[in-house]
Length: 265
Image 1: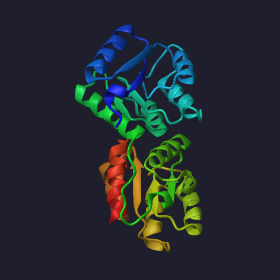
Image 2: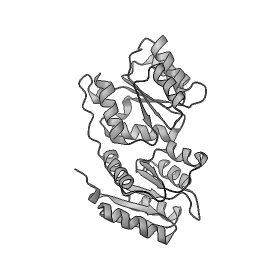
Image 3: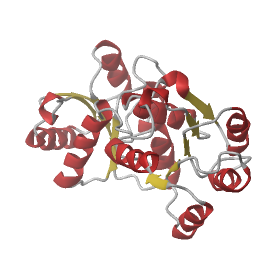
Image 4: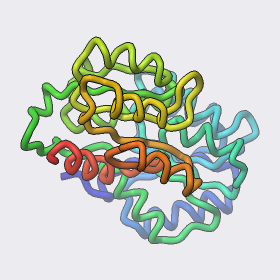
């Protein structure tokens, strides 16, 4: 089984002081191989030649931002499944939300704790090798899944995670909003719906309410993956009938556990 010592990590940090500190913390955590660069361009060059197990990045470089970097990684079929971790003092929702939507292992503050770093490294291992879903009521290879998210990057990340758990890519259908999802839902009998909350046209809450109250498959398990933090809003979603809610960014191990629970009920 993969361990922290097996990980090859690419660190993108323009500050030599910060880079040295993060490398020391990674080495203390047991990481076996670390390569450091200071620009996004250098990072993409290395990724194209020597694919790392994890990219750890700050938000700002001289040539681009962490948002630009993760979008470039996710936009290339050769690198779109590489786990990405942000370490930054940035707190702006406007800056962090695109990172969350792109699908990241973790967003750690500066300074971060050893506990946070270790949790993120373990999450990386679960992302790379989560193990197959163990289901009593379904054959995971035949599981039909509807993924609903207005972010193409988030769609891709969720698909990568669940295919690593044994779901066949051809059995996954994607949609960019609730209205588009319902068109698929009425044509195909899905075993699982994974949806975002905040989407244009029809949001995740409206989608859940329609499925639970007006569809011919009202008992389908529904997992919501969202960066929404407003308690009142999330309580409304729970009342609508969601099976489980998971934060963005999410830990793949947590997603696997939630899917095991809601699909085995």
